[in-house]
Image 1 (cartoon, rainbow, N blue to C red):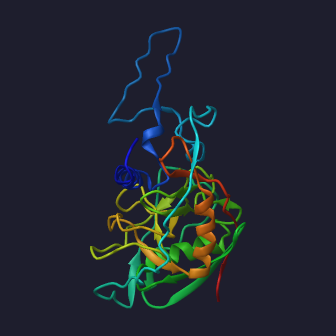
Image 2 (image 1 turned 60 degrees about the horizontal axis):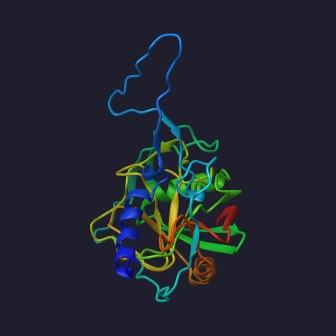
Amino acid sequence: MPTNEQRRANAKRKLERQMVYRQERAKKRRIIAVVSTVVVVALVGGGVWWLATHDFGNGDAAASETPAQESVDKADKIPTAMHQIPKRPTALPEKVNCEYTKGQEPAAKENTPPANGEQPATGTVGVTLGTSIGDLKFNLDRALAPCTVNNFINLAKQKYFDNTTCHRLVVTGIQVLQCGDPGGNGMGGPGYSFKDEVYPELTYGRGVLAMANSGPDTNGSQFFIVYGDGANLKPAYTVFGTVDEESLKKIDEVAKTGAISQSPGQGDGKPKTPVDIKSALVAN
């Protein structure tokens, strides 16, 4: 039986490699053999034809498979103290240049990327997510991450987040709720990416709003809310705002009902209580 410390360590390692919309541990390699002549399928530069994909919400198995074991892990000891509001040690200039680069993967939902060019690095913007558990209120801060804020507003105004679900809940060690994939399996994005807006002094805790990614400079549409413990996270995830206390209390209740994990103690999976985003309203 693993100790709590071992579970926290496992959760930390898991989040660092999975915080993005791709979870490598669930993929399987298969090679198609073509009958009539012997054809050798070249594996060039590590590129493999992945025939089985991971559905995060259903554990590690492919969507057509049934997990061998499933459990519901519930959050306990959720910190109630709000994390200090993040602030850059050195302020950005009044405007910064933002670039949004088209990716190889198609968009999970049709959208128009933000225009490249200068964006203001001052001011805040309110966003309200209308969800199945009630309104979640965000305060986006351009001084922290102007390109990220611009991207989030752009997607929200296009209704990109409407009628999507928060596909991932982590309750053990690190406590976050992850959303922003229209496909609902943690693998989807807007079809483009943009650079990180991070700095070494970044810390995470209750109330912080940050971007999920699959490595450096791979930001897209997926984001996560730290509703509790986030101290073990490295400063690799762009913080672009905060979530208010009343909204966090609603997420607390979701965390207490648990995450559907593939094995006991994993503490990482689809929320047992669905958090469905119905709308994303940007304040004028």
